[in-house]
Amino acid sequence: MGRRKGIMSDKLKVELAKELGFYDTVEKEGWGGIKARDAGNMVKRAIEIAEQQLANRSEN
Image (cartoon, rainbow, N blue to C red; front, side):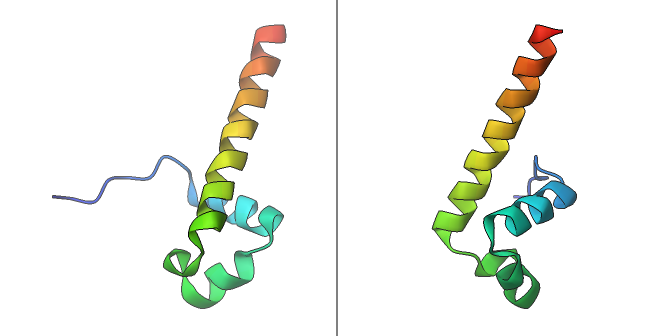
């Protein structure tokens, strides 16, 4: 089975990792080195951003 393409861009993932404070781990160990909690927080933050963008679109 092939690897699925990620939904989040690498740029967004890096921005979120920096915002959430674990980008140093990504630099040292790669994405596989982050904790499950950090990955979950990254997804949660990405969802919050997407919801804000949708709300802003519906207001216009």
